[in-house]
Image 1 (cartoon, one colour):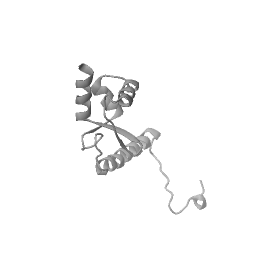
Image 2 (cartoon, helix red, strand yellow; image 1 turned 90 degrees about the vertical axis):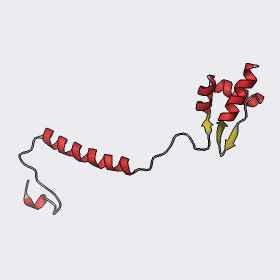
Image 3 (tube, rainbow, N blue to C red; image 1 turned 45 degrees about the vertical axis):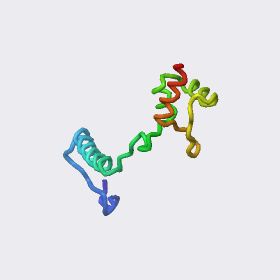
Image 4 (cartoon, rainbow, N blue to C red; image 1 turned 90 degrees about the horizontal axis):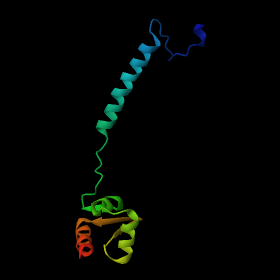
Length: 102
């Protein structure tokens, strides 16, 4: 490669195998990604308000999402709509269990 083809920011690496180069790049990426993940704010899956998503509520009730929707429409369990999402409180779930078990 002629010297005039190299840009001022380019680097010529000699005496390094492809495997060594891959390992060096991999280590650098691991360090950078670790820093990114550690500095990212931790997001809790469950809201601190005690609200459960539909899937979580269905798992706690041990029913399918279809059954949960049917119970909601029938008034067996109260649902709380926030934006376009549906949530169930722990109290709603325990009250529904009491209604269903009677």
